[in-house]
Length: 159
Image (tube, rainbow, N blue to C red; front, side):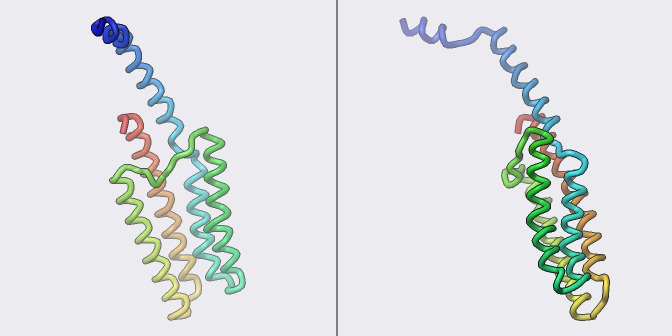
């Protein structure tokens, strides 16, 4: 009796192979959708530039730039990318290598912001925060694209 129950619940080799193929197909479809649209990382780079550059423009404009570039624009980009791809990614659950790159990125943003502020406020160098913002924007786009590639490879590999 026990043998019949075990045999009834176990698929044969053909069914198991079909199930694995189905998983591979789904994984490949998801992997193509995990990659953000071309405009997503460009928009994030521009939002970082807006945050940095707004400090150079006018002290009264700085809070507007920080709110729009640091909160509203990234939120809108995430929403639009989710609608465009049909997939929402929890970027905090990234593979370890991606988390290390993102950690480097955050440290670089803090250093760039600190250097830009020091040059702008300490040395009264106009355009210092905008220059730091351009570097930060390029870094944002490059790191974002690399992160997308790592996510896709991870999904394809089943990680």
